[in-house]
Each structure stands twice: as C-alpha cells, then as structure tokens.
Image 1 (cartoon, rainbow, N blue to C red):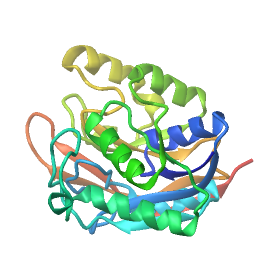
Image 2 (spheres, helix red, strand yellow):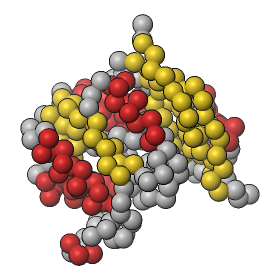
Image 3 (cartoon, rainbow, N blue to C red):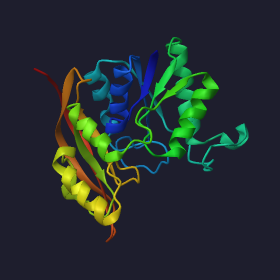
Image 4 (cartoon, rainbow, N blue to C red):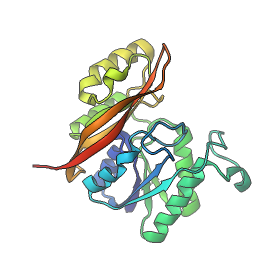
Length: 252
C-alpha cells in the first residue's frame, strides 16, 4: 500500500514510518502541520510544534517530498471522539489535517494509507481516523497501545539517534535537552517508578527529534541551538531547544 506519513521529526512519527515499511508499505510523501511561530512551543492538543523549523531536513534526510500546512485552527471540538457537525468543526485544528490530506490526495491520488505515531492518545488517534474515514484512507498506527519501554527499546534496536528537544515533567530539566534516549533511558526508568513518568512522553513529558535512523540517507547535525524557558514553575518547568542552524551529513 502506498502511504503518506504525518511527521513532526519526533521519534514516534518516524518509527511508525519504519514499521510501515517493514510491513511492506511504500512511502510516497511526508506531511507536516506547523504553527505560526514555527519551531517554537505552541499549545496544541494534536501537533508537536518544537523542532518544526527543521522539518525540511527530515524530508531531505529521508529523500522524500514533503507537503506542509500552517495550523490555522484551534482545539474547538474537544470531546474524545470528535463527534460534531460541520459547523462546530469549522476552525478546529483537526480540519487543518483534513485539508492537507485532501490536498495530498489531489497530488498523489494513489495514496491509500496514512502513517501516524499514535501510541496512547485516543484523542489524537480518533481524530486521525476521522480524517482518514472521510477521505477513504486507512490509518496505519503500528505503535498503538504498545508498552512504552518496549517501544523505546525497539527504537534503539533500530539504530535511531533520538534527542530530547522539550522537557515538561517532574524529574526532567533543561540539562536533559539535547541528550539522547540512550543517555536518559535509565533515568526514565527511575522517574517512571517515582512519579509515574510516561517513558514515551505520552503525558506531554517531553518531545524529541530524530537525528539519524536507517530511514535517513543523511544524518542531521545541529550546529547552533538555544535553550528557551517556556514556563518557569517550581514543579515541572517547561524548556525547549530552539534549533538555529543545522547541517545534513553524508553517511558512511
């Protein structure tokens, strides 16, 4: 099945592409939805915003075209299954996803599937499925409902170089930004036991960026970045990495 991949640059969306290909599907197109303040932290129930300013690097690294759309809507229909009429949905951020998928089908009418990195968010998964159903597409979510530590282990076994680019949890601080999953794996176990931390960040604890993986023809190197404090509180301050410059490096 030919498919497009919803990608943020984070570990889940990229690993699900790897899983789709392992299952025999053919990647045709990457799709990204980005905020007005691209690359900076933006409140959204659906989309990762941090790191979106280097999404073109992901496209070049994978060597596949990318279709991008700015997120114009806001979270309006917030019931779990997105059941509502068209008037209520107008201006919702989910409709930005619907519109970009519709555009993708115009450009690539042989696409049949949509890859997403949904793991535990029923809210997000049902909204992707809603858009797919309206367009006659199949939702491909191979990571859904899997054990999160097991998933991280699979990602490392697939030689994914993943770094943290946002932290927002008890037990994480700005010092963890830029660290690889390998470097923080044991720490994740410790704060999971202490605080109930979700090791894949499904509670919004962190966001990530994939610098290299078997899918990439070139690896991404961050040349310059800035640590930004988005929310300073005593329990779980929110910091993110604003990437200012990067390079694509040929792989051996």
